[in-house]
Each structure stands twice: as structure tokens, then as C-alpha cells.
Image 1 (spheres, rainbow, N blue to C red):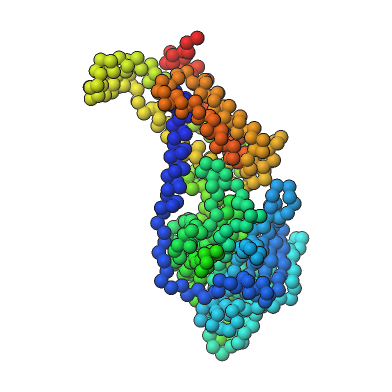
Image 2 (image 1 turned 90 degrees about the vertical axis):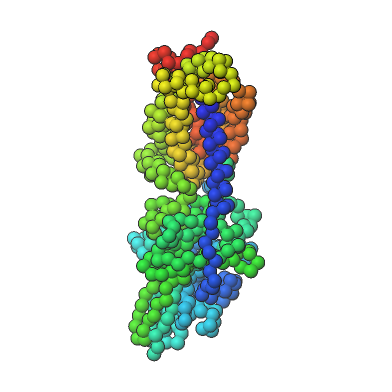
Length: 542
């Protein structure tokens, strides 16, 4: 029919896509349960450590860490370049250790002789340190924080190595075996979090249709580049994956923590939940390393604590950038994001960059849109002949179908010509939708006037109302009104329905749809003018 039917088709495709996406996530096959995990760390280590150890404060230009000497775990992490809330002046708290909420990064040495093996005596080693505060100095690119522990003639030095401008922290063990026997150890690293969020730690972003932000775990292995594993999955079944490559992570909107073990060794990725299902853990256990008597060996892993910056994530580990959740359209969303970032590097305003990329994408798709409207215009011209066939053949559907196809063939009209361009365009529009909703670069990014944060909803709902008005205008400009009563009702309420959805969308997304609608209005006028000029389009009756 006309633009009104296009809007209806787009709406149905959107809703169908998100329903399918939700079903896919709920019914995705789960990894098998491990018969037995060799991991031997206690679920209440964090509580014990808060009483037994001292805290060491470590600060780089982008990270502020609190490390407990009991076990040498990271019990708190702040991101110094990101605010907790807009204009709060308080750094974003990623890791924390509170009585009612725990989110920490643990690591240690288990195995036959590992000091973190509960059979060796004390549950976790208590490390010694020369200082309780380490700060990356001006002009310094690397900060090394040593924690030492000695037992049975073996000296363990655990290093946290922070790098300027980088959220990837090297966690390294130097093991000096001066005993008379070999030492058999294996490194592990795990992320532990309370499943239920306290009221004062609200989930950030993710409002609106299809924009529910994922909070849970994920992993990458030799057999899968990226796979989510929700907290509910952890409650139901334990993950157990053997791999030589990959990583394990805990995710939330815009931010992530991840352990990246040595990639050329065998690793076991695992999950577990506490008995009362209140805490979830995801981690890795590395391959055993045997250090002969009188020798030294170094083993380690990387720990990511930071925002989901795709370039840095990609440099840290293969496929780690996939934690920026673009869904199955990531292969389109990623290049679109890099294009948006390239535009922003010249313009300096993410909002204006969104406007520019919208024009670029719609401009590239203009030939498809033109073909779509041309096909619909030709179909409209043939409607009187099709109606005449209906009157002639009545209920003889077979004859009606044959005669209709004969007319299409004679006039060289493809009845799917109006739908195929639309279907081709949908993946691009959806990839933009996910990209704009998940890029951390848009978090707290101002646009203009009252829009101070493109990742948050419009506080005055002006942009959603403008989006609804532009959608309504597209309907009114359509030269061919729909005749089916049901479609007429759906089309009448569609701008209102979409406006209600968009009230909670991030401003950046709403801005994109406003500009896209305005572009649609402009190109619709151009295309219809061309068709009228060529006599392919029936002019509106006055």
C-alpha cells in the first residue's frame, strides 16, 4: 500500500524480533554440569578476609583498587574517569565489599601444594607488603604492587601491575622454590557477586522495548566466541568448560570485569552458587605448574576492571569486545560504532555525530527506499485492474491468482518489490538501535540544551513527543490511505504506541529515530515528486 503499511510492517518486525530474542535467550542450550570441580576455595572467604587482612590502596590514572592482604584479592574498584551518577563527582564503584552486597575479584594458587589449598593449613595466605598505599606517579607508565608470602621454604610474590590509561591489570605470581621438593600449584581467578542488588545500587540504563540490560556472567572458549550465562543459569546448573583460549566475565550495562588466563594452557571455566543461592561465582582454574626444587617460575593472568571500551577490550583478549552486547547483529553494530566514533573525533559532540551517521546510513539506503516506493507506486496503478479481476472471477482464487500474476508479468512488476528493500534495511536499523543503546561512550555524554546525558531518557519527554509527531506526519503525508478497518485502527494508534515506548528510551536512540523520520519525510517527498513527474504516481485529489 503506502508508507502507512511500511510503518506497520516495521512495527511488527520490531516486536517479532524482540519476542524471538527473548525466547532464544530463555531456551538456549546450557553447558553440561561438571561431575566434580577440583576448585577448593570456600564461599565465605571474603567475609573471613575482611577480618584477617589489611587493605592496600592502589591508584593509577584510571583505577583505584583496594586489595586485601588476606588472599590478595581485589575487594573494591573505582573507575576514576567515570562518575557514579551525572555531575556527582564520585567515581563509579565497580567492585565493592559491603555487608549486604559483595562484588569482588579473587585469585590464588591451588593444586597439590598451593597456599590457597584448604588442606595446607590456613584457608588463605596472609600476604605481607612494604606499604599500604601505591600511586602511579606522573611520568610513570607502570605501577607494580608486590605482596609476599613464605611457607615451607617457598616464597610467593603476588604482583598487581597497573598500566597508565588501561583498565587491564596484570596479576602475576613469582614462585621461588627453595625447598627440597618440587611444588605443584595451579592458578585460579574468579569473580563473585551477590545476585540481588540492594535498593541503593540501581541497575543503570536498559529501559525500553528490547533494552533490558543484561546483568550476569559470560565466557569465551575454544568452541564459542561469546556466550552469556545468567545468574539463574548458575543457580540451576554449574558451568564446566575445558579450553585453551577464552575468558570469563561478569557483566552489567556499560561495565565489565573479566579474568583472562594464559591462552596456551589448559583451563577449566566454572560457575557455582552458594547454598542459599544468594551469591554467584564464575572463574577459571589453570593448568598445574610444577616448580622443581631450587628454581623459580612465573605464572599469571589478566584482570579487566572497567568500562566496555571496545578497542581496549579487543587488545586485552580475543572476542572480549563482544561483551558490548550488540546481539547477533554485532558484525554490523561494531563497524557502525567505529564510524560513529570516527565522526565524533572531528565533531566533538556525540549527539551531532548521531545526526550525521543517521544521514549517512539513510543516504546509503536511499536507492533501496526509492525502489521500494517505485514498486508500491506501480502496484497502486494496477489496483483498478486487480479489483476488476476480483469482480470477474469472484471466489475462483486459482484463476484470480493466475490472471493477477499475468498482469504483474506483463507490466514487469514484482509484487515483493516493496517488501524486499524494507527487509534488507531492517538489520541495519536494528544494529544502530543496539549500538546506540549499549555504547559506554554515550554514557553521560551531553548533546545540547536540556539533554545532558545521551544514555538517559529525556527528563522532559520532549524528544519522544517530537518522534511521535514526526511519525504522525509520515502517516499524514502518505498519498494512499489504507482501506482495511483493522489496519486503519492500528495505523491510527501506532504513533501513540511508539511514543509511549520511547518515553523510557535513551535520548541518543530517540534522537536517531527523530532524524531518521525527518529524513524519511524528506526522501518521501522527493521520491513521490519524481514518480509524479514521470507519471508513475497518481496525484492526490484535492
